[in-house]
Length: 104
Image (cartoon, rainbow, N blue to C red; front, side, top):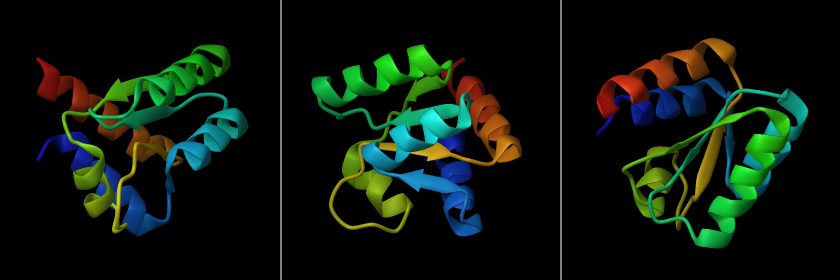
């Protein structure tokens, strides 16, 4: 499990997570910044919608190594979750640092 996924789980427990593509995109529109974490197997159309919104509103987008089923399990949902958005600035920054550390 990568470090960013741990912070995503903490954000869920703290109630600071928008789960699912529509909720994540709404959070991007409202927050004007932050970061969206996208499952590795998200569809091309979903990735394009998220990329376009992130570019327009200045949010960052990160692609997780985790598939949608594992992301759903991590946030306590059944089925598949293609994207999540951490609404707390401190948790978002910690997840971003952890994600970038895992990448290098």
